[in-house]
Image 1 (cartoon, rainbow, N blue to C red):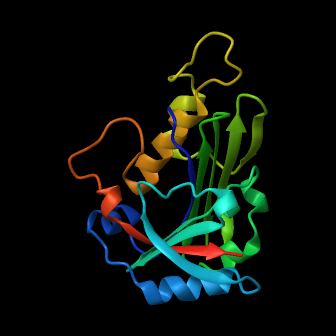
Image 2: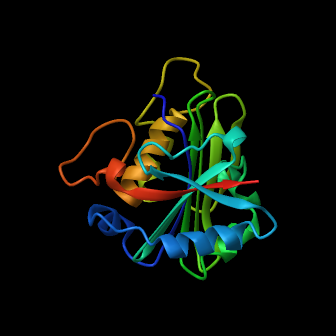
Image 3: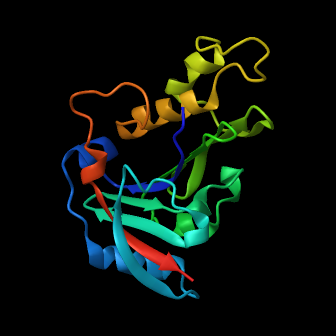
Length: 204
């Protein structure tokens, strides 16, 4: 497993259905959102990205990617890849304007995975864990897709410090909440991630 993500989703519609509909990017709204999120920074436009290749922008480049679609906004920036989802900068929650928020972050180098769900600005599920640090944060009731992992149905090799591999749960979260994954099985109606264009920006 080698996937990396630093993604935030705002949704007022079913995210799976939006992504499967081959949504068209609203560049104007993407520009307004990046200006709102980074009001004290210089923002330049760079080449577009997409949901397949731009899920984890390189911090040193200062790049981030935004897709604003009918009913769904996608933000890809390492600024949301925080160890504790509860410490996500409030501006990212405020910018949702009441829409449901879902954070997804994982890094294959240290097998770390974190995700968070907010409804009406209130966190309902926050989880972060890795084999080196154990469970960093675990707030709220586990989502249904998590339960087989906590109940020991996806064991790893002997002496692994967690009852499952965090990246496997990370892919399961993508599948359950958004209808796709980066590694693992692919279904016939999965969205074509490479065709979902994200507007590129550089923040200085």
